[in-house]
Length: 114
Image (tube, rainbow, N blue to C red):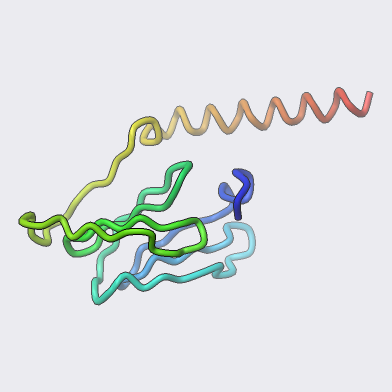
């Protein structure tokens, strides 16, 4: 799952202390990573990695589910947290980028067939 098109075909679910990657077209589970004995898992996916927050810890994962790091957020407790990175939190911008990429690919494809 290294190219961007395949990353767009993945749904990430945070549930019962796990991050689960599911193929959006088939519903098939691609991988599952246990983060510990945590229940609620908040997820953010950007172009570089998957981030997950569970019970006071922030995790950085690869797109294959490998945990790269775990920050226990010392002194902040276990309350709810929101995750954000610059440039990926505007759904309208993300949709527009996707539309533009698809249009460019279609134009390139039609130009090579003519």
